[in-house]
View 1 (tube, helix red, strand yellow):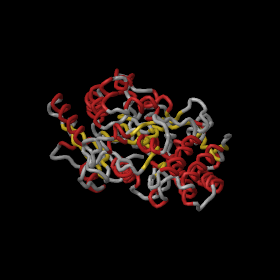
View 2 (cartoon, helix red, strand yellow):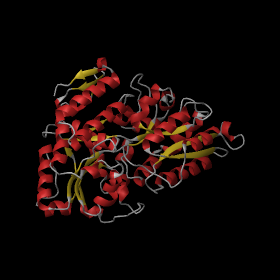
View 3 (cartoon, one colour):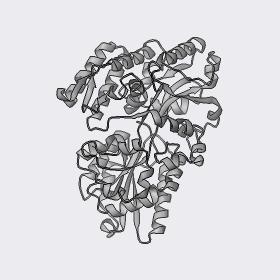
View 4 (cartoon, one colour):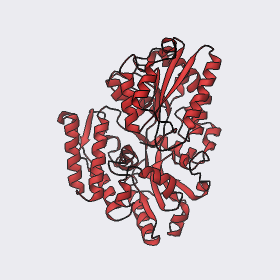
Length: 459
């Protein structure tokens, strides 16, 4: 997925386990003490979340004298964070009381027995009615329909474009493509008119991880006619293989890279390419069109490593069109993060109190959404003028929530996502044709989930 908030500290799995398992004195088992675990990435020095959470701890402990909240940041790559978090939640000796979860991993953690259902809490919490239906769905167990987390934020994806570069290439702005063909046509025009500028960035390949799957492939796939039945058919509870939409999406990837409309293959398949896009290629005017996320302004704010004040006048936004312009005419993908209470937490009641009375009040949720330039999941925050105006693009990306899609929240998704990345990479490098790559994907999915859990696509 995307790079998130980080600090410069190094926090190993062993350290995390030790901290989670040991309190100072008797505080580790005190009914008034909780430990809160969250992720901090390796590739930035931005301390926005660390600072925000520290302020939440101060607010909570002042309002609840005698309580103690210990923040436990795990500094790691995204995948390593998931692994370390699961290790911590396996044992009562090391389980935290509150954890920061990627919503895509919630169902796999439910299946592992790591999370506590929260229905008894949410049923008595008036604020729960303010959470958007899609956000609630992202934290609901697929097998039992129970709530396992409180959404913290979401995101949407669209098209960022450099208005100056498009105008130089003869493309009128504001620009809003109506079909995939319009996107390709614009990229070809930029290539012809602006040597030295990368026309279009579409994340691809295995090194890009979830950025390739979500910002890249699924922004295409969920814009095909089959839409919500293009990857997983919820009505049949089966993964889709052999779909025309999958091949069409791969063909788009193939066109971008075989015709030189995207970054060089060496760039695109590099492990840190996503960081380079936001901090170098876009600010330096070397990339014209970028299919990317609502969080991109975090790269350019005053708190960023390389602030870029001009972005508000240079950059434009457009919705990703559906393949042929069919209704609803645009598409987006959403992820997001949430707060969960581990099944083996020592003090779940106090963790819930911290979550519901401090972390996720309307005021503090709005403060976090503004601070981190992410998309609100509370409807009362999403309609708040202060939130909508805090970042110039907030209104645009919030409106995309109406036409967004979520990844299948199932344990098998990780393996399916890896198969998507593998298929993308093979057509990006030219090692496989679209048909061959799609066939390999189908076989990979069948091997991962079982033949009986797949269904042939119809489009």
